Length: 111
Length: 113
Image 1 (tube, rainbow over the protein chains, first blue to last red):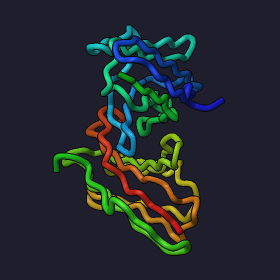
Image 2: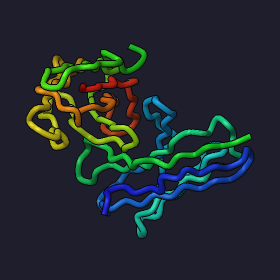
Image 3: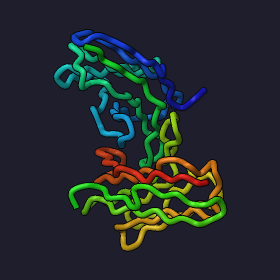
Image 4: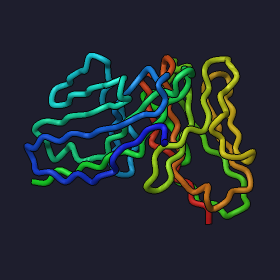
């Protein structure tokens, strides 16, 4: 099983739609979870951290289910500018050092 | 500086040549990471430096790859005897503390011909 798995998409949605991405991770020792956004031919940028209690940042909501080793990202009222690849990111449990990146889910928001 | 700076932004090299990629992290960031991203693929961890600790080299794909960090600041990733499969975007990131708040540079796009 891959360390971090995501549906590659693409998800093609109209403006204003609500879209959800899911991610699973294999290492039960992982403690920290993030969503990063990567625009085409650009570097990844931190979108939000994911907390056990779930957290919201404007139109974005992240959820974590430790028992199922599952992370989700919900985007409400999609904007054209949300078009990007969304990377699910998990720390490699037991090491402070590095993050494991999923291959990403591509989102395309159409007018 | 204001962000993580990488140079060169693009590098085309002949197979078998050595290349050096440079990363200048954000001032005050003690942690520095190298990743690479092949076309259509996810980010692959290469190496991690944290302060004066021994680097975590567990991601380096072969002994042709090495990296150093001088004075706790600038880092150089060296690839010896480059192969075509080394073609990728090499990304450097730094953070103030551990894996929180990674900031990536814009990367070096390496093409081995």
